Image (tube, rainbow, N blue to C red; front, side, top):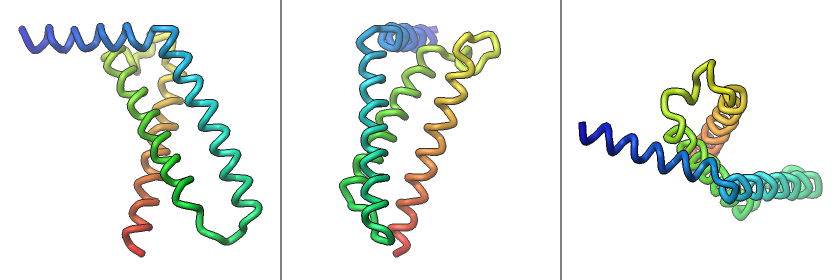
Length: 118
């Protein structure tokens, strides 16, 4: 089946990317930058109680959500049906990453709804 072979090819390419040292380092860098961003936002909130978060912080949040969503999707393509398999040695991380990304997407979506409703 040509479609199945093409899908398998995508899976192999995604696996090659996600298992590379460069990809792991890049993901680590984004996690670190996200932590710095969260710290900066928390500091701003403490110093500016009751004020709306600046647009720049919101845009940065949306960018990190997009980056982590793309990373998760790439890992899902790479691992296929085994992504959430109990036999997968990374199942705990996969569940954790999925939950964090889903919560981030939901939070961003609800934030956009709030902006649109205003």
